Length: 276
Image 1 (tube, one colour):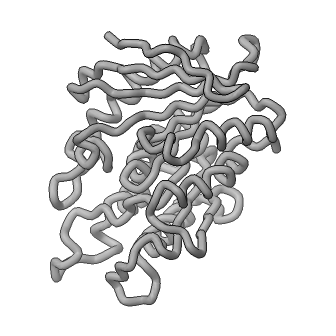
Image 2 (cartoon, helix red, strand yellow; image 1 turned 90 degrees about the vertical axis):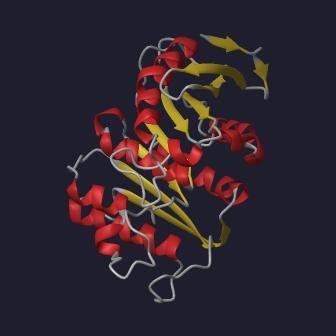
């Protein structure tokens, strides 16, 4: 069951449908906000953008960012979906294949099942589109790790992924353990090493120089940037081209916050959906 909240027209072009979706996999109600441009043509398949941590989109000023992009793109057919995280965010986000050394991410597999078996069918029904031209998934911090993990594990479902200040440090043993090794114990890096090359996938990464202060290997580069560049290097070794298949945005004064990701969002939208 799901309770539909009233339609809200937030701009001249964007209509929002807010849905409470009762998830059997997550055992909780999930709020989902569907952003529908009112100029969509039923005869034209739109693209679909899905975003983890949808509860932060209002703080970001998402409707304005989205409306400005659509206007500048000449009314590109694009639907956006913001998926709100719940109280067990640290358990539902992460890497589905393996939790981290503290057991966080233990429900990431359930989140993946929710995503494909419960969320997408409802999005198709409520948007009125049974199929989409392409699907793109993005997320922030731990939600960014979740987005990358889902796309990497299901490449046939997606074309691109947006990874904003992602928790790419996610590891199987504590960094204080004498045996800890970046090249062995970072989970997402290892999943990329062991995964298959899907030539159509494209990757957007965003970091900020003020994202954090930790520098576990003492190389003068904060961990969030180090982990991101390390993940990109793994993708290169897998066969992806640094310039053609990846986009790296490093904000000189960017922090680990919604305001920074909001600044990066127009760049991401243009990269992912701008008319080529």
